[in-house]
Image 1 (cartoon, rainbow, N blue to C red):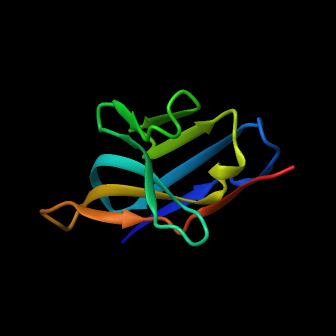
Image 2: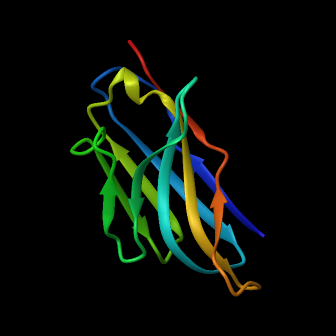
Image 3: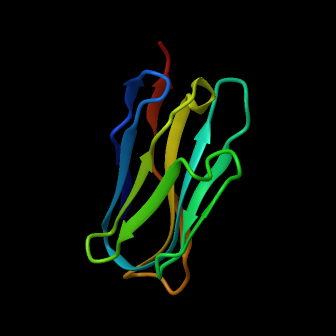
Length: 121
């Protein structure tokens, strides 16, 4: 069984910073892409950042220059450093990973339960 757990969310003032972390655990054989999504109230879930297994990141236009994604393959972790936060960044942030377990031959998508980020004065 595989679990993804996010941490690091909270309340921050506009212009502030937060660092989110995601840790994958369980019977993991290999991880391909790891992604950060977010979902604001009344809106669809959107892709914020994606990072490949060799560490190459891609970002949504709305966060380019403000968010930085990184991962540690040895620890099965991924981080999202967020600076210059805006009220419109308020959302539940989810971690997703393409994982092949030790019992499977194919990769599957696994999601965390999310962490709340609120940007407000």
